[in-house]
Image 1: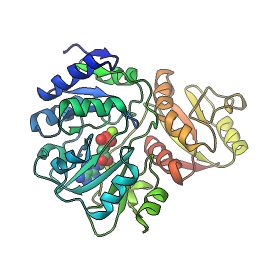
Image 2: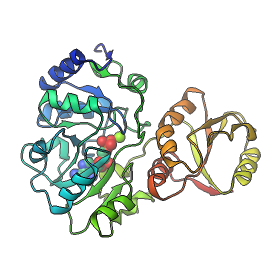
Image 3: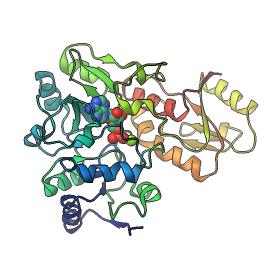
Length: 340
Ligand code: AMP
Ligand code: MG
């Protein structure tokens, strides 16, 4: 087992991270979405180590992170005008674009696909590490595959201690859910994963409709192949069995009261805890999707720490940033949704 160091992102720690990455090692880094487990995206052996450390299925491709537009050509083979437009509008920021792949990026990053996913993060530490390493960094979320994404360095440590030599501690991630993924590799733009950049914002920037992949709101149908392979896996799940409860607050409270028992918890909005007859964990404020996104994964991890076995969750909206929250919590709930 290797020793895992947790360092504040001072210049010497950034240099140390870059040295590890250039030598083919792994470093966990903060980004504005969630913490990433980074490796040199041009080095197949380094990228393989990411899959091993996470226990990630080999067919689930990774996002490459760049710090400047000159790095885009190392990942993408062709940048269509719509991608140029979205880069101007939303980079650096929580938007990933799927583009025809370029030659330099390692096969392991693309998991056998002819496309590559790329993002320019806005987090100053992520940018500094990419610049210092001098290469695009492949970086999925720095959790064990299947568990909630880490939004603090302590969350990373809980999953990755002994699996990675260095974690840079940049505090809590601002957005709190993974990036929006949009594919521009086909004839029309398709939203593969909702995130901090909304479908509505993408449509406004492009001046055309963005199609939503079926898997955003549903499990995969029998025989359906995933446009975004990550969508087919059980995801973001705490150890407890989570159920989403649709309906007004009083109906939710009644539903929870009827189902109360040992190990039963509520996952509600801030300020609602006192009205519930079971222990409650809050994820953000009602009608404030950004605060829900920021708090969701930490709340799921908190439920684990408190030993929750059954969780009844308030159901977020399905538009704007709330769509990203709904998409994640729906998977944490393995698509169990009830009407109160
Ligand atoms: P993660 O890095 O854990 O946030 O997951 C990355 C997400 O991006 C997964 O859902 C992948 O399936 C998706 N992704 C990465 N590369 C591609 C690609 N070339 N085509 C479609 N989806 C991709
Ligand atoms: Mg992930």
